[in-house]
Length: 213
Image 1 (cartoon, rainbow, N blue to C red):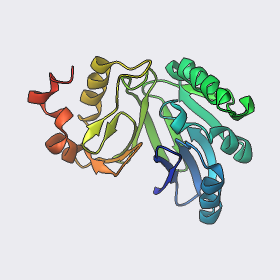
Image 2 (image 1 turned 180 degrees about the vertical axis):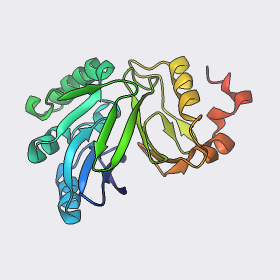
Image 3 (image 1 turned 60 degrees about the vertical axis):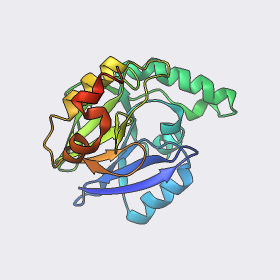
Image 4 (image 1 turned 90 degrees about the horizontal axis):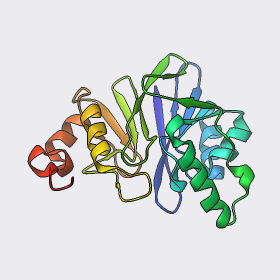
């Protein structure tokens, strides 16, 4: 497995290109904006995107998804509980001048336990609501892509429509049971590990947790 990160958009979203080194098949995770830059990286690395995968559907994570789906004939994937959020984001972006055609319907919806494969790399879908109802993480080969569920030293906000603090902490409980050496690639900011976050992230400290609920 090979991972490329490109930071895009006004809110500095981490878009990831995750590929199988033997086949160059790839999944594009959270293409938030700047499709031209993402395409340049894909072409430069000789990748063959099969999927565009959205960890959730806030505007800063989705605005280049339509362009990339069209260019590579890649399947657009999101959790089934994120369809309503996707519609809200679409309407918001249209009001800002985006074309409605930039927001195609998903080709596939996923749920807890479903799998995404690229070459020999297999990723399991973990449903992690809280930041949004259909937020998901992708886990495989001791690597976790968390979107906006977990950050280095922080967690996703829950004060936006569809957010739920209790559900977020249930989701954090789920993913922090993964092996301590699991690499964590977040939707914003630097990468980390599960073990490091359990030690240093104040939101994961049991004594502090009740302050945030």
